[in-house]
Length: 210
Image 1 (cartoon, rainbow, N blue to C red):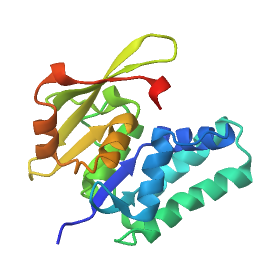
Image 2 (image 1 turned 45 degrees about the horizontal axis):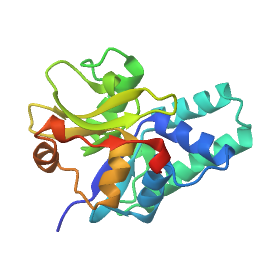
Image 3 (image 1 turned 90 degrees about the vertical axis):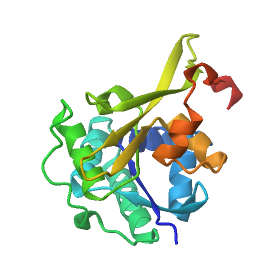
Image 4 (image 1 turned 120 degrees about the vertical axis):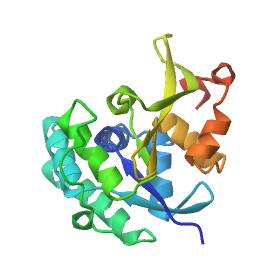
């Protein structure tokens, strides 16, 4: 039996969800990802959201700085915890022992996210801040070229981070991850190495197409 796909959503993805809700937007990449996680199924396998209490606390602090009403912020944090408990592994944040921050990253907060991911043996970290999760020596693959609303372009990547025990974690942008969900692409390191072996094949993504 295939093990559940364990997914860590970085705090900026949760913030995107809140902003989209407040702006009454629908169908964003972050929303499609979270909806799939709430169902417990994505990419052709069962899926489990993973988070730590430290990440939940950070999210609460960020929402407070964004002037999100306390009740709404609390409800959203509860929704994240409920999504974890409803997953196939029925996880609780306090069961995820992230340990000390991963020292391969410069930022302590990002290091805490990475430590949680490796401690929980997660498979994917979804983040908009790709370069924050690009330690020296990691394998990087060009994925998608996106055209921003101001006309500029940005090259997205996915990274594959590994540890001496052989465990590997994929770091992906929400646009790419939402695309994999829609195409039922199982985001294993092997599948992604095969998919992005030729950077010149990276498609152009435009927000006008969504």
